Image 1 (tube, helix red, strand yellow):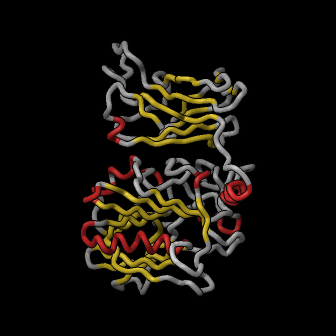
Image 2 (cartoon, one colour; image 1 turned 60 degrees about the vertical axis):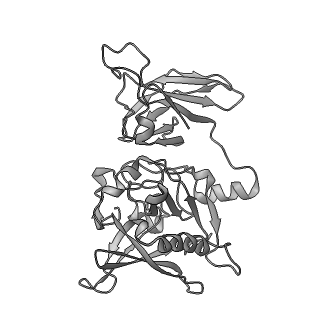
Image 3 (cartoon, rainbow, N blue to C red; image 1 turned 180 degrees about the vertical axis):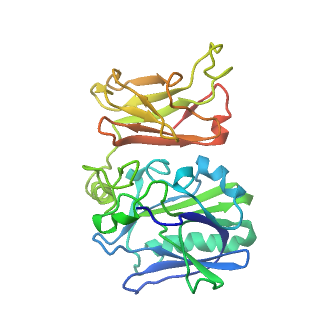
Length: 343
């Protein structure tokens, strides 16, 4: 079962503390909202081998989820799984898993370990004061007693595809993370973390690792040993907002569509493959294929799948139900009538 009372805290960063030599170290971030201080212990070392966590820092994070964040009230907001408003590293297409980095939690010197990276971003938010907001996704806990002025938020990392020792925490749209908003710069900065033992493909209902799934450890080994693995077929474009009546019976222009690119030197059959939208509605690709080095424009006008103009995600699954590629687009991109978004 997934972690309980999953949600997000909207607050202001005020302090941080490193734990360089603790046997189970965390980066302690402190945030405040409406007079309540929250302690946010961020895991920076795994109890399982390899001990280094993988992470992604996106200094200009653009995703449909960011449009809803400023409307949240300060403090803690619970996000039920049924709302699908939480973070999901796999289904939300928040980042390319092949681009993660792995660093020890502490090394001598500056700007060379995971806590250095966290400290740099936390300090930037602290320096900005009221001109920066941090959104902490995870699970609340009573840090100093149920009625204390200090509360806590933990599980600030991926919470699905876990090793069997921690599979009780698995759940979809229950991933943790930190998103910093700097309104003056019109920019969001996202920080996502995962354990190397966690799987890249999980069950849509339980969040458990799917059989045969690669793990982040496999990604790190691939990056360290040779060129990173790349997707054979990519989602490279989408017509989200056609001109005119948008897939209505009277519409005579181009329908909503998704463009796929085959990077390989051989034809790729798409039998059993599917495109999936943010609401998990699928468009099956049975009977279609892509020539070597070719592109395929797939109309999704006559399927349950929709490309909403307010932002969304597009995920490509293979015949085994494993994710091949995934992209996201924002409300701003969805407003551009007649234009094809390029990913």
